[in-house]
Image (cartoon, rainbow, N blue to C red; front, top):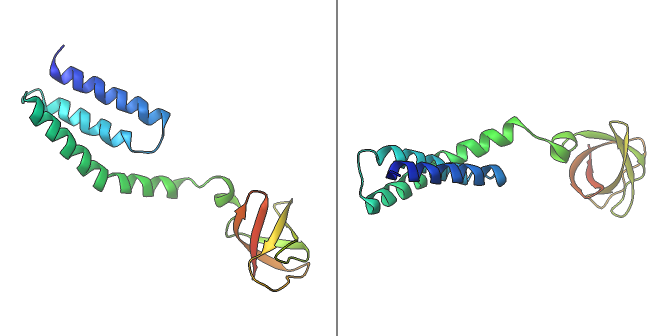
Length: 140
């Protein structure tokens, strides 16, 4: 088996690791391994190839990973952050720091006021964050 094939297999293994742990870390290493495999066709010094792999992977991690991470987070917001946080809800029962209820999208949620004042029933509030099944809100 030739050196470029071995490095290519390492790249495939890193791709599999990325699939198992989708953090966009191992993908950068895999790209570095594939580029090193191409370089190894013409250059066969193992210490030199290791240095090339480290440099390429570092450059990809520093410059390309932030771009990929930013793009991924903007394209798809799911769960609580995408559906509730920053949205307006109606107060069903007075909201204090200890109790209260809101409705949003026809769903009933426990709510807590992030300030010290009481928000009366019938008002509208903005959802700031959540903690498990409790939404933390502020008066609009």
